[in-house]
Picture 1 (cartoon, helix red, strand yellow):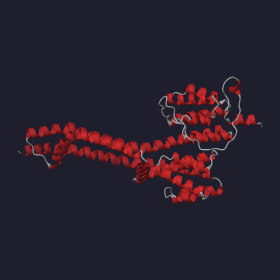
Picture 2 (cartoon, one colour):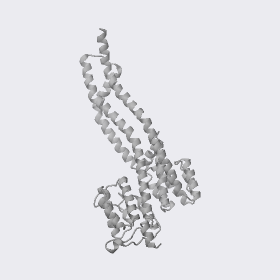
Picture 3 (cartoon, helix red, strand yellow):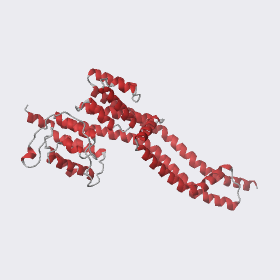
Picture 4 (tube, helix red, strand yellow):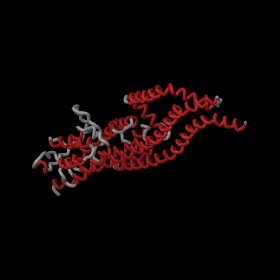
Length: 395
């Protein structure tokens, strides 16, 4: 089989597909030493909007299929750009196509659109270009992105449900204290009824809320702003992420998500031909958690000094012992990428089970909490009426 046939089968990136004869030419980019690509500076002419991972996954899978079918790269991008419903994604595809027509490689063109294609994406594409297996790499990338989206949605569902219930409870309580309780208070004053202790507490809360509500709202948004500013600092991000990992219930889920993401990212990079040190460097930048990021950087530094990956990974204290043991086994057998992907699959299933279990526990607890709070307020406001009715019936 000649080189052109191989290039056509694997969808190898072509360096010159500008116009005319160049559109049909298939000059493969020669293999080169892979280096982690830094994201290019964003142009200042207009604000660039980020692309949703779901749109990126669809684009990546479609591009993989087209390249595997033997279509020239520029033609693939033209077709995908015309059919792309998301304007941000369409703009990114068009910009990449123009860069390639100007002579850039696909990886270099992607690196200039960092709002759509991150460091991991561009480095894996570079590996695919160098190895002549771009279609295979794009398939792995689309699978990776889809699994990332699923992981994030699982964590989001675990966070959104209790947050939504608590928010609704807070709104209901505020409305009752702000609007309903004052009406009952005026009624009781007109009747000259004596108020029991629970009712007096609720009335006091209602009176205080009327004056304190602006300060409470301002304090809530102010605290959120300050927390966001604090999280933007290196020390603050490390402190907050460490606290999240140690939280009851949700902390275990976040740790499993972090382990799954680490293993999936590094395993995908290694199986795509990215060297281990470069893979760890990229993985640390895409970890999504400062604690995991620091641990991966520590592991990378130890490997640079000649150690294996398993021992420093175990010494970080961040990853479960089973993970370091399985990685050590994969490293000793020369199947590290396969082992990492198996670990990722295991922990992704663990996250699925943990989220379902958490929601099963939280649902009755939150409903009971909402019932106790709202029901307690309502009962306390009706207690004076019950007292009056009992007095009237006794007379």
